[in-house]
Image (cartoon, rainbow, N blue to C red; front, side, top):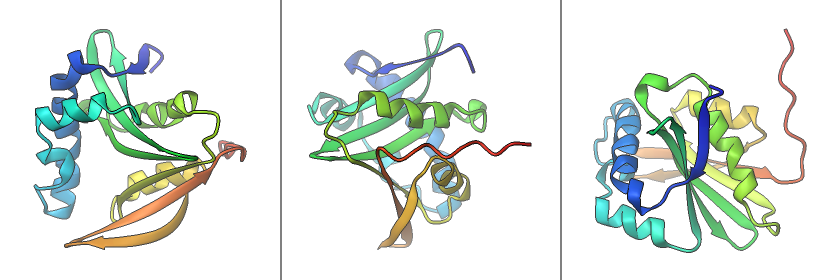
Length: 165
């Protein structure tokens, strides 16, 4: 995926971003049997308000003029909280999620010491990707019928080497 451009998403792309997130999170909703997960119920107005928040950076991945993925970063002192990592269904499993995850580091303020992310406990592919990039499981949180796994990466630690072979 060499032709991918990653940049900040602005209000002009809000509708497209909402569509990308909804398409990407349908599989999560099916996995958990819950169509009311926040990524699917957020309104366009709520999304636009979120894009305007100074402590939130939303990055998008484009191929040509098509938005094909995104990730949301909320800055909180020395901590960054990642969320809403989304890749359009027809391009999932091709490394776009990893590209977005790694690109976040370029947008973090210098004082950021740790990055947190959460995902559903049963989202094995997500958990594997985060672990591969230095995120370690910290705890689980039960919310209704869902259990979320929270993972953390301490910045300044080396990126795990890719396995050879």
